[in-house]
Amino acid sequence: MKYMMFVCSDTEPDTDTADYPDIEVWVAERDAAGQRLQGMALAPTSAATTVRVRNGELLVSDGPFTETKEIIVGFDLLECADLDEAIEVARAHPMARGGRLEIRPVADFEQ
Amino acid sequence: MTGPGRRHPADAAVAEAAAEAYTRIVAALIRITGDWTLAEDCAQEALAQALSRWPESGVPDNPGGWLMAVARNRALDQLRRASVERRKLRELAVLALTAATGGPAPEEGEDVVDDRLRLIFTCCHPALAMEARVALTLRTICAVPTRDVARAFLVSESAMTRRLTRAKTKIADARIPYRVPGGPALAERLPGVLAVLYLLFTTGYDADGEPAFAAEAIRLARLLAGLVPGEGEPRALLALFLLQNSRRDARRDAGGDLVPLDRQDRTRWDRAAIAEAAGLLRDLRHTGPYVLQARIAASHASGDADWPAVAHLYDRLAALQPNPVVELNRAVAHGYAYGPRAGLAVLAAARSGGALDGYPLALAAEADLTARAGDRTRAAGLFREAAARTHSEAERRALLARADEIT
Image 1 (tube, rainbow over the protein chains, first blue to last red):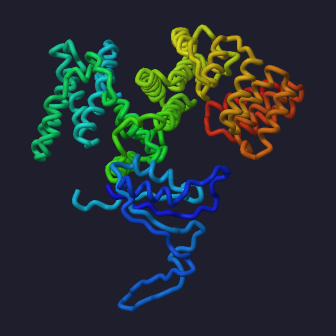
Image 2: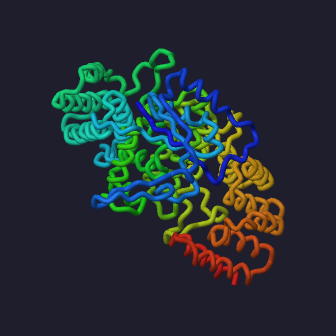
Image 3: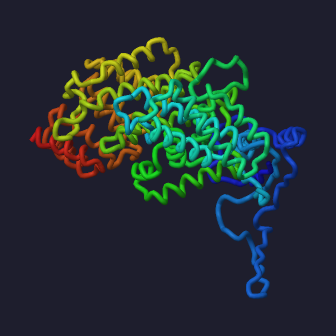
């Protein structure tokens, strides 16, 4: 089962002062376990461009399509047996504490 | 319950066996087929067949096994028609009929988990909204008709049907596992399950609630306590439910008005339930929030509360689980243990954050402490303000009666 994990910032990060888990270790361990298929950090939203086509006209504008304080800063594509496994993978990510993670299953149109 | 119990009130034992079998049947069919709706439909149909046949043919020796066989055959028929994979069909075909009645204990092993426990943990999964968890628990585990669940949550039947469908779709789409979490995850997930049962109980026990839900919460707490005997909190929760529920008949007078604890007719308390709760708490070594709450409730149920002990239990509960409602109860306990001014001091500290502003029970507690401290005029005003803010008609009448009493 594939899950897309959106890595997001959060205005209220963890107040626990314990050391954050190392992202390099997280990536290496999840890759070795076959739980992470792909993933990247994204450039800041100041580099984002929104594209639409309406009635044949191309509309290009500066910035992300929603102005929110919580923004997507990266993503990881996970391969997990079920949601509980995906939750365990997410909880070990440093941004579970520094921000928030949204896990969404990839749609299965075969079912 | 929609079980046979409703039509055969005389035979409570059969109704109970059927209710218990229902949960086992649904839980086993979901595990094998993965289809929640199919599982519920087949179990419901088995119950309906029992209703139509048992009055004439008599109740079979093994009612649970009978129901399981009917539900299983029904599921097999439907799946064969849908030409489902052979593996599921084979599993269904060999589904032991003893599964519906408990049967001989399976050999010890990691994989032997009661299907009902899987069902409870899946219905109460934290990835589902709290209201969806309670609704799923009532509908799928307790077989409460959707219209009754809808009424308790003040929504239309069609809205509740959509909510249940959405929850089942999420379970399938996000692949929420049908599994009891293992190792440390069990302790981590258990409080969430207990919170669902607690909400279920209060929905039933509230002044204007559905009494049947309280009974279902007790049945599930008993089941859970039996299935995870190593954990203290489920046992304590069951004890807490039994203690609160033991006063169900005494808390209203003939006119339906609420009677405060200290004025209740104690001969109407359910002594058997209180004794069972005392037995559950006796050897409990754990200290969790429900253990502390159950010990507090046990002290009240003794009819002669040891207030300094209760105040101390609330101090520990407040340290473990700091929240305004616990602080409010702590203030009341300190008021009885060390005098109304001590109680008012704790209450003032609890209210400083503003979380209790306009909360009718906080106003009622302040009114009571103020009256006992001697300022009856101010107390009466506070009782009236609390009455104006409560949503419960029975509570409103009780609060106005207190105001009239002291003026």
